[in-house]
Image (cartoon, rainbow, N blue to C red; front, side):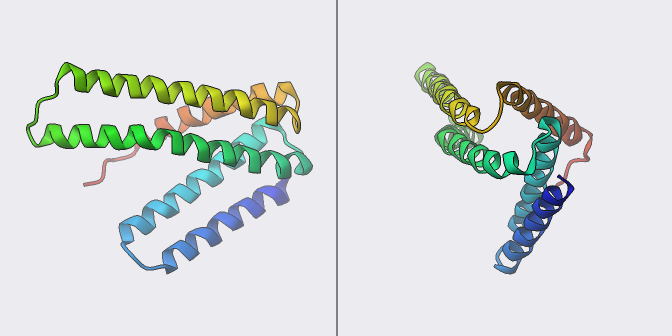
Length: 159
């Protein structure tokens, strides 16, 4: 178990180093490094909470990462729409009831797609871990998100 966690941290560190070597904006490099640290913390936390064996982890994490990537893609359209919505607001544009309805409908649509993905991936998880561990995974994801929000709220803001 300790070897797995060490390997995951090593991978995250190498990945961060390589992204920084690509050049580009230092702010982007910092964000990438922070995101890699976030992913490593998440993997460590969830692996510990589920008490995954090395064999389970080898099969579980690729499936879990695939789910997260698909959720990210499903949410992409909503993120872009919200970003554009607020950009228009900053320019002083007023939004109609129809504009708000489109955003609300898009949000609901994304949540439905996420629920469908969850349903599909619970079936995939069930082939490699027990129902108990699937339940613990769902709880661990929520707990990890809560901890990250708490940490973010305590962090001083950057300008």
